[in-house]
Image (cartoon, rainbow, N blue to C red; front, side, top):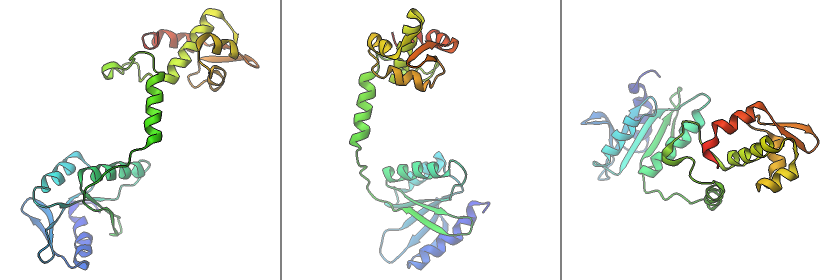
Length: 221
């Protein structure tokens, strides 16, 4: 399928099997379907997700509550995430979503209607933990010139600063001095390449770690 028009035949057939009379390019709508005295069904076609497609679909809600977006089913590495994220957005906006496979198979991912997302208590608690662990407001105003500062990075900086000042140290000593209870594990994992395992339980700081203290100096003190 190379054109938006290629999506029309399989969607029309699907709607006709449900008893709708279907016509294309009616007014501003790509597809309009009617069944008896029911409100019309409007479908907007695009080969792929785009902001303009969402704009069009939302505008059609002024005509009917039964509005679908239809796209060629995405493929590739990011396809599953793209479909999941756009499906969630459709649900939040009260839109339906239809995907069409290259072989013409039509899949209704969701129908239009009000949507009340379930809150995740675990995610909320994780957000609060990260909030409480962050020192100060290192990402104020969306300032990400150096990158996003996380509580984990701040802990790593505290450990690196202790090693830079005191030399090679036991993990337990670093934990006691810095208040980073997970210091030994953090230095062992060494996600940023800042730490060097000298011998069992004893760590030093690398050149990358010293550079990190300079680069991220604003973010944790």
